[in-house]
Image (cartoon, rainbow, N blue to C red; front, side):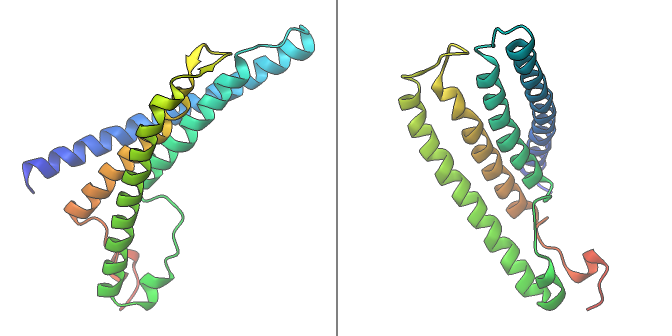
Length: 170
C-alpha cells in the first residue's frame, strides 16, 4: 500500500475519532443546556439568554460530525438486498458509483457553504456573541470530511462488500 494512501487512511481514522468525541461532548452539552434552561426559567424565573443558542449550535455539530463519523464507518442506513441478488461485479459498480456520488455531492455542498460563510459572518448570534457563520462551520466540516472519506474509500478498495464478506453463498 502506498505511503500516501496509508497517510490518508490514518488522517481519516483520526478525523473519525475526533468526530465521535465531538458528538459525545455535544450530546452532553445539549442535555446540560436544556436542563439549565429549564432550571433558570422555571425555578429561578430568570431565563438564560445563551442556553438555547448553545444547544442549537451543539445539535448542529452533533448532527453533521456524527453523520460524517458514521459515513467513515459505513454505519449509515443501507439496503443490502442487492448484495444478495446482484452479481459481485454489479454490487462493486454500485458501491463505487454511490461513493463517487457522495463525495462529489459533499464537495459541492461544502463549496457552497464556504461561499455562504462570509455572508453569515455579517450577522451575530446574540446569545453567544458569535458570528452567525458558526452555524455553517459544522456543515462545511462534515462535507470536507465526507469528501476525504470518499476519496480514501475509492483509493483503498474498502468499498466492495461481496457475498463472501457477508457470509452468504454465491
